[in-house]
Image (cartoon, rainbow, N blue to C red):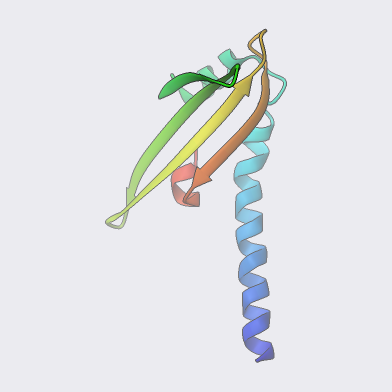
Length: 97
C-alpha cells in the first residue's frame, strides 16, 4: 500500500513540474502588450469579448504517435491591450507553444 501511495505522490509531483514548465513562459506575458503574445505565438485562433473583457484564444491540435491532442491558451487584456490574465487547458504535449 505504501509503495502505491509513494508512486502516486511521485506522479503528481512530476505532473505539477510539467505544468509549471508551461505556466512560467505563459505567465511571463502578463503585463506585456498583446502584440508580444501575437509575435510569439502567431495570430490568435479567435478574439472575443466576454462580459466586457477582451480575450485572445490560441488553439493547437497535434498528433503524437497516432493520438490526437489539443491545447487552448487564453489571454485576457485590459482596455489598453495589456495582458492581465491567462489560462490554458489541454494535454501537456500539445501545450508546447
